[in-house]
Length: 608
Image 1 (cartoon, rainbow, N blue to C red):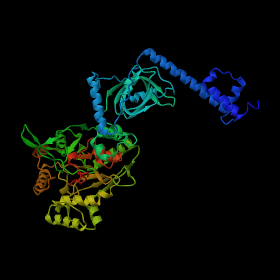
Image 2: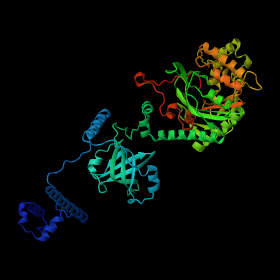
Image 3: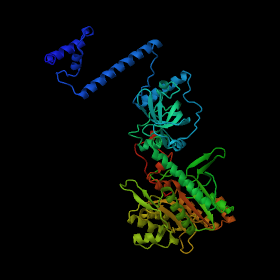
Image 4: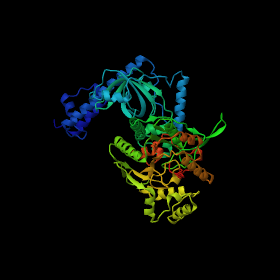
């Protein structure tokens, strides 16, 4: 026994067992058992180590048996079929696009249809989540459903189990493609699926063992292949210039952008319902006019070939809507597009959406109350609070805009006198050169810039913008502007030279313009003539005389109040967006060949 325990004997037994002679040599059982319990150094092994080695030997035997079985099966089937390999995806986006195009064209040449006409969806992703969220973990329902969506990510767990994130309707479910459930050639189908592809799945609703709601497909169909490489989920799609130019890709990649436009739709629907409940009738008026009227703004010019006349894209629907009130439609409104050929900046776009309504037998005081009800109620309905967070451009911290009614009211001329510590001339003299010079000198003294022509109306507008508007964070009414600034507003009933008008500002920006309407045809014509003189002097934004509208007033416009509101800016403030391009699906952009690397942030020549 002492001899058997020696290190030399241990090495001898090991060598013999490893040799080809081992099959012909029978060693004592006690000797073999003893050698197996010893390490190469001759030390006795622990029980745990012995168990570990036994398991390894067992696994090795099982693997050898499986390999032998596979070899037998392969021999019985004959030559091995060509293995389907997932297409290699070049990392360069240009090469990726070229590669994908060639692949799809190859499918077409082979007689396949990579763009099928129809796929029947039996349940939306919203319904799928609502109906099958209660399925137990690790199980699936026996009901077969079909869903469709875009593939955002692909993960693999071996050759026979693949996972896709399927997105649509602003939601996500998982596709757990298991070869054991597939009724198609699993490798052939799934080797073709790429990120960005739109696919349809027919299969069982279920959950993974970890509780992830999934569809376990029997069939997967590529409905529309994506030929371009999607931005990676890790880095996202953040470049603003590219986002605004490729809004479709922005919507695919950024859920917050998608939700912003859902919010925009909710805002418009709220306004429409609010006015409908007050008995207003929604109407539509022409987009092209022979005379550009209804607002002080520079219009776009187009040409009508059949009539062979130049026409103007509308800057506002105001004159048409008031003619409808003359016709007996006492409460009308329109939500639509307007076009102003002015600068582009963070709060201005050449085409924009406005809402205008006209209400017979009302004045500007009634409209301020309606504005408070509508806008405060809208803020509460959309955000759940009167206090809404908004982050101005360049600000490190957001400000809180309080929409709690009633809103603050500031009388324009008295406020300017207070801030500038000077007494203004009587508002009835603002048309005179002496008053214009007084305003001009005041702007020069306080370094308030105003481009030519430096008319009284433009000088006053610039003063208000630099001194009063910048203080209006919470909703604020600036009221009672001079007549020279408001050719369509009715004169103030108690203060000569002023009008019954208000503008509402939020976060220093105008969102509402409203007034008691001028319904005296004689005064209206005189105001238009003053505007025509300003236009002749070089003011491109001044209005011309609209004879058709003047004639309609002669038939009688009842005492009426009119209200105009910019939808785009309102959406900006309620979605915490400082750039108007964020709330327009397809904002105006400089053509790429004209880009100079800088965004045009030139301020427009008037507030709109």
